Structure formats: C-alpha cells, structure tokens
Length: 160
Image (cartoon, rainbow, N blue to C red; front, side):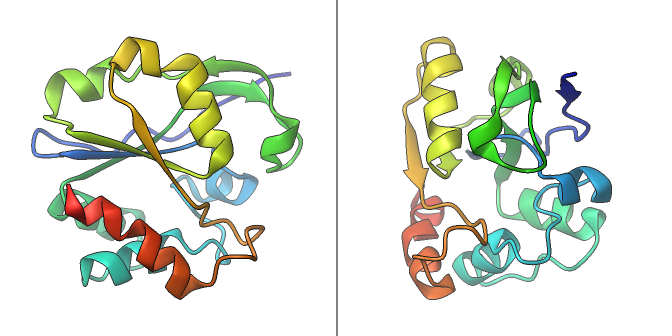
C-alpha cells in the first residue's frame, strides 16, 4: 500500500534555493516535519552553513528556512517504502514542483543524497529545466561523511 507524503513544502516568494529529499523517513512522518530523526544531520549542517539556529520546533525550523531563502520538499508525493529505506522505494509518484517554481524565484536546486538526485533526474528535471546539484546525504547511514565534511559540501547552498 502506498504511503502518501504527509508534509507540505516549505517556501515563500523569497525562496531562491530548493532542497529536495527523496521521501520522509518514518521518524519524519511521525514528527510531521522534515528530517525528524534525531541522528539525521540536516539541521545541524544547515545551521553550520548559514550561521543561524533552526531551533527545535517545526515552526522555528520553517522560520529558519524562510530567513535563509531556502525552500524544502521531497521529490516524491507517494511510494511503497519499507521503513525509511530509500533502497526499498517502489511505485514512486513525483510531487508537483510547479507551485513552488511558479511562486518563488528558485535559481538552484539541490538534492539531499543520491536517491533524491536519481529520482529528481527521472521525474522532475525535464519538467523544471533546472539541473540539480547532488549533495552528500545527511542521513546517519552516510557514515563516510563527518558533519564537518558535510558542512563543507553543503556550503554550496549558500553560494547561490
């Protein structure tokens, strides 16, 4: 049975950068917000890159993203997935990125990890016409990247 993406996108008319994950993890779906697993380094890495504190609540994280002119969503609207394993994704249905791209002056798209990048290229690139830059995954499963190494790679987000 497919799981429907339960989290709306974060963006406003000032968002210039769009960061896309693949699909929310079990912990994120339970928390009702992006990157809800405490071991995921997404929020710590963005904090290091921006020099700003995202706080702990969905509301403070949303305000942080908007202050940083960052839009955040996922490539997929629904899929069959076992737990949080991107490798188990089947029957993928893409999100419609048009509402973001029509309202926000997005100049750059970044994908959080190889799965998000592959899915973006498969489902979204032709529609958006904006090539994405694949950044190393902030997932705790990506043990080859320390937080410092992630922050160095993710600095690209702020250079747009």
